[in-house]
Length: 308
Image 1 (cartoon, helix red, strand yellow):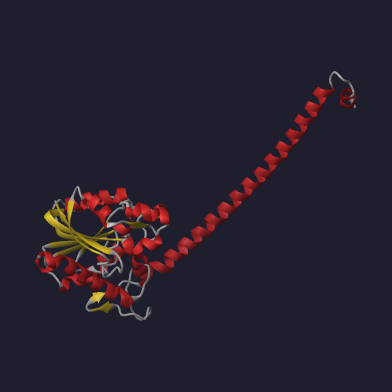
Image 2 (tube, rainbow, N blue to C red):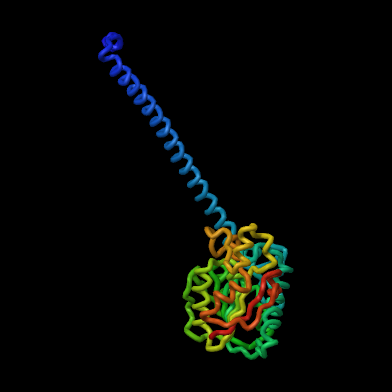
């Protein structure tokens, strides 16, 4: 009643109207706060439910896949456990490291990898048979490495960031030594340990900073004048780039997609010959460049680098 009377008084009516507006605003703010509070509580409930579902999924996934990671092919998978005297990794591991699990292509691609090594080395008088120690950097489940004992008597090593792949290799493949590495260097090898290091489809998934860091560490691991063979996504992959990215690529820039999933197959790096030469320059000279020469990784370019 009092406020209604005050509204009719010329002197204070304006102040009353302001007070009325403030009161309405306050009530709206209180209502909005309650709505937000209810939404927040619902989000908390949804998050806890998702967290619980994820925990159950992860436990089930690990229970189902762990046996598969600890064994190779066999009757249950419909695949041979051994081919040419070498154990076959399970389909799940093949898929993780190659994006598919086809056994025939796994074996053929590994053989093609060795062919690619020979094809880029031999024109320069370098023979696999003359090597004393070789490292497969990013060996996965030994797709290429499994074929090297037929080509060389060199001591063989394999390293990869996939700990499950390395665990399987260590248990099933006695012809080489295996070690897990982090996404960033260094490797756990002494300086000058290797005559040859090869990296198929590794730099294709790294940013420029990581490429430089790994080139420096791989140079450390090579003997003086040792060799690094590496593959890269080159001109064949230009259709995967936007017009703006193609301009940057042609200008010598490194283009990287999905950097948030660094080191995984979905993270893809695209680089021209000029870019590779510029990145390698402090530690290596480029001896040979073969467009689409990575035969086991079709359409990837192949480089032969020699340690400075």
